[in-house]
Image: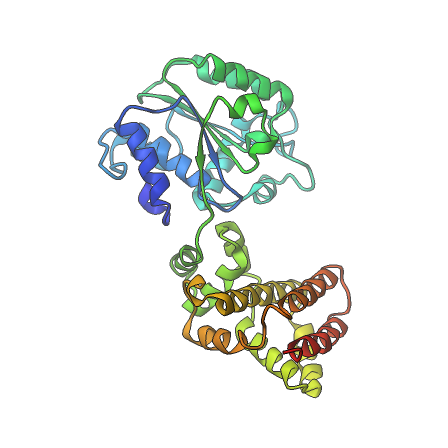
Length: 374
């Protein structure tokens, strides 16, 4: 993977590039970011740059022998350890190396996927994945060999927080006495679950979530979505490209139009319209109902922020900006907490299979009262 294939994150890219250019490559680095962030993608691009035979100022060349192999994840000096479990095809000696073909396909499809997607991909059914104690012997074996082609032998460990204690202790020993020309790239989502002694022996690379604009660009380029739909999804994805990709299959209606119509009906006490809208709300399906309410909460937050200081809102489509400007006069500090709590409660009950029509109508009555407080 190349740095240019990752949206944004210029600050992290420059930090990684300069570490190689100035020959300050730490033997163990922890790429820390939430699921759906660029932590795995950045680790892959970094590993590609380290062994690139014709390094450019801002990226790997992408065409040398090393880059070609790295981009297919088949470089002999690039090794992977990841959580696995027994499946129908692998029933014993469950080690990462037995899942390398599936791992390459999985990562090349998208480096932003999470553990649940990986478990489904290998057919784990309801089993939990981990990095077993047997993996510790394989780990020692991996680093005992010299690099075949590149400057470094690189071991990338995905989700090291899922290591069995025996494997974690084996890793700790390797980090304390690192083999020559061997790099460990740990890609984690929960550093607090790692042994503190492991974390203390790594150089931490904090990877932020994607911005809303970066999510929009990703959805437009990778999923061919129109800007309005992509923007709507970006508000629900919370900076995760994994969540954004899944939401493309879940969103089936225009949340903004439905939300504005709902709020106007509530504010005007048009409960006949509210009852009619509850029929439409029910037809959305439970996942869409939950996503709609999350979207409503996100848009409400922007309404409140706009009312405090309009500069706090960096971007809104023109139609949403017009609504937010007007609605910020209705939702103020005196009722924002109550409206937020009502929408949160509605989401809670929908998540627990309550009757969606009843929840929608009841919430509408409550919201109407809160909005009229002003």
